[in-house]
Each structure stands twice: as C-alpha cells, then as structure tokens.
Amino acid sequence: MQDIQRKQATYTAHSSKTGIVGKYDVWLLGISLFIVGLGLVMVASSSVTVAERQFHDPLHYFWRQGISILIGVSLAIIAIKLPMKIWQYASVPLLLAGIFLLVLVLLPAIGREVNGSMRWIGFGPFALQASEPVKLCTIAYLAGYLVRHNKSVKDSFAGFIRPVGVLTLIAALLLLEPDYGASVVLFATALGMLFMGGVPISRFIAWVMVAVVALFSLAILSPYRLQRLMSFADPWQDPYNSGFQLTQALIAFGRGDWFGVGLGSSVQKLFYLPEAHTDFIFAVMAEELGLVGSVTIILLFSFLVWRAFVIGQLAERTGKLFSAYFAYGIGLVIGIQAYINLGVNMGVLPTKGLTLPLMSYGGNSIIICCILIGILLRIEYENRQPEWGQFPKAATPYAA
Image 1 (spheres, helix red, strand yellow):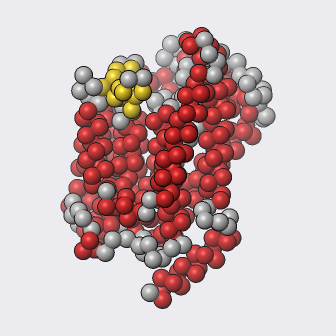
Image 2 (tube, rainbow, N blue to C red; image 1 turned 90 degrees about the vertical axis):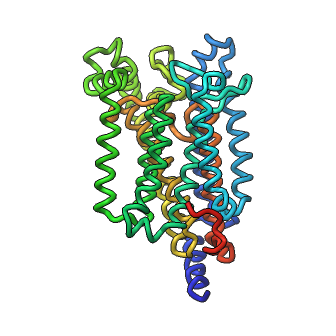
Image 3 (spheres, helix red, strand yellow; image 1 turned 135 degrees about the vertical axis):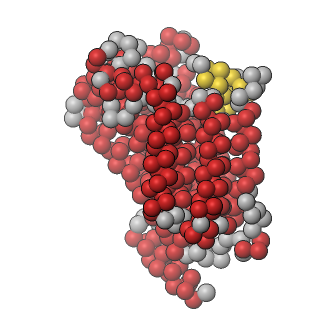
C-alpha cells in the first residue's frame, strides 16, 4: 500500500509538470479537440464543391460531420465517467458483439453494399460501419486477456497463439467485406499490444514476419490490390488511370509549398482529387496550409500517440494493468491508422481506404475515435486515484 502511495505521489508531481492542472489531462483534451476542430474545417473546405454538385448544398458534409462530432463528444463524456473496471468486466462480451457485427454485415438482407464492399449495416438513412466499433471491442478484449493470462503470454506459446487465433477470425471476416486496411490496422495493433504485454522478442519478431508475409500474399493475390501496388511503385506511368489518385495528391503537396495557397483555395479538390474529404483530406490540407501545416498535423498526432503510451506506462507502474494495455492499444490503433493514411497521401505507402483519425469525413470513425480519447482521459484520471484499481483476480469474470 505504501508503495502504491509513493508511486501515486510521484505521478501527481509528474502531472503538475505536464499540464494536468484540473480533473483531466488538459494537453490531451485540448490537442484532441483542436485536431477534431481543424478536421471539421478541412471537411468543409475539401467537400464544398462535390457537395454542391451532389446535394445542392455546399455544406452537406460539414453538417453531417458536425452531427457525428456532437454524438462522438457526448459518448466520450460518458466514457470519461465510466470506471475502467466496467470495460474490463465487459471485455469478452464486447469481443462477441464485435464478431456478431462482422457476421451481420455480410448478410445480404442486412449489409449495405457501397462501391463493391459490404461494410455497412443499414438503419434507414444511417449506416454503421462494422469495422470501426470492432477496433474498440478488440482493444478491450486484448487488454483483458493480457491481464488474465499475463504469465502464459510471456512464458508459453499457447498463451500467445490464442489471441492471434481470435484476431485471425476477425481479420478473415473483415477480408470477406472486403476491408484490407482495417485488417492491417487491427493485426498491427494486436501484435503491438502483445509485445507490450511481455511476449518474448524472438516470438514477436517471428509472428510479425508471418503476418507480413500473409498480408503481402493477400495483397498480391487480389487483382485490384496488386494494381494498387503497381500504381504506387510508379504512379506517373499511368497518371490518368491507376495512378490518378496518387499523382493528384502529389500535385497538391507540390502546390502547397511552405505556407500553402490559403484555406479554401485548393484547386485539387475541384473534382481532380477523388475522396478529397475522406481518405485524401491530408493532401488538401497540405495544399492549403503548406509544409508548415502538414508538419504541425504530424507532430500533433505524434503527441497523441506519445501521450497514450505515457499514460499507459504510468498506469502500469501503479498496478492498473488493464488500463495500461488499453492505453497502449488506443495509442497504437490511432497512430498506425494515422501514419498509414499520411503515408498513402504522401506516396510512401500503397493506396488504402483508411481515413485519417479524428479528421476525415466519416461518422463511424469520428465517433469511435472520440470514445477512445474519452477512455484515454479516464485512464489518466484513474492513474491519480489509487483506490480505483482492477478486479481482484478471483473476481475476474472470464477466463478465456
């Protein structure tokens, strides 16, 4: 008990030096809100022309994104108020719910097909993209698993392979939609969490190699994915067909120069750059805000990831292992998806259908990201409350 109090005193002293002056982490909250706000502005800027043509309302996507942000912030506030022990208790049911959604979306009578992919469950005018809540469900499950089976994960192959088997099932369901990008993000996040949970480095590297080979094989065996890889290698070879999206993004970066052409003055968003308000919002941002604005966004996302790992490390030091692994998972899923999106926009990674977290247009994505930030704020808050630990081992409700 004295050891916990000593650690808590150290953390409180650390908090006063890192901007935690009130109930919650001011820096984490402020920068998250800044990214969301800037994203809303860029959604309006990048979609105004296409929204006018499609809906005769230049702010159509802006209003829809604004409503999604309000829902996301409301759910984040609820998440901030929920003790982490509730998430721990519900970790296995959440996983089952996530798998159920992935199965549900594949049913022809329920799933909604858009652009050849069955990724959405229709509810009248609304649609739920099953892969987004699955990210939250998977992180919660893995965090709970690492607490329940911490010793076997470190010492035995069986303890490591069980969650990998669960992730393989989830990835298979995602590939049936198909949603290759979400599969990559989830697998990378899961492997990262297992590594943070103490998996031996040799076993971790071996399974990373297996995952890379498997994902690369799936990419080259699919004709449209292979075409994306070829166009990524040299987009200027066919700039009006397979390389069109990437070449237009690179032109946007070139036009941005140091300080950009000015907010709202992008030319590439005028029907040149496809998906300008979703997958390629960063390219429009680079054109309008320049290199300075682009580097600022990269630094802000780097801060979020760093902060998540710091919060996780401090939770681990105070004995809150579930919260620690959950924080690591949040940092990994936001960081991996963000940097894949940024890499795609800059032409250093093959084109993938992944949004930029907290910024791109997409109601499901923004809502889940807001909830994740809310949970991260809760973890940081509980780090300063030593009496709110985890379940005693005997009270842990699930063994699998």
